[in-house]
Image 1 (spheres, rainbow, N blue to C red):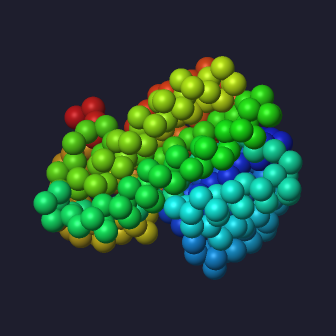
Image 2: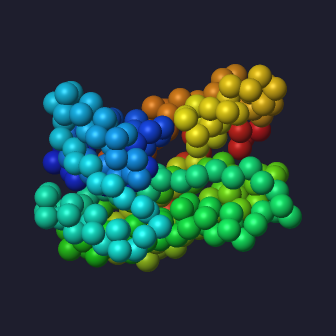
Length: 250
């Protein structure tokens, strides 16, 4: 408990899946959590759950590809809490479409939501962290950002971009005591992955790729994100942390 005591955290895509688990866990560990998502009803449900458990959270309806909305959300968080200690760029989408079959519309959508949103979040949060003499940014990538992923060119490009953008930011802002790391989930059961995990043939293939004989849980990714957000990882920056059951090892 209290691993994030007195810290203020923004978590995008917090209405469901890994973002929801991160928000619940951060609040249990003492953080004041600003949760953002495009799904207002889901956000309000997360806030109610946090408050029922004795935590503190505020919901912001937020399209992460909008620069104006990023500016607005961060301004509101600063008005409410006075500082920002942690940013988790969690919002993202998947696209299992081969390179030759990917349209420009699909490409732009995936790159915007997965990569450009990460850029925008850091661009507008870092100045406040500089004023606060430090902070931690955790960007959610994927194992597709570490290895080639067949049949998902746009998704792989976006997640590889998140990984390298994180490293660049870690180098640029280390002098300001701002740490930037990326987390790379593997086959994790979330609403976004449900159609794959619930398909017997696809699940069998997933499990053939892992060292641990099961699909991961969103809560297990949240624990890794918590570690990188907390002061326990105070000397860790610019790294990629796979949470993948051993896919990349295998």
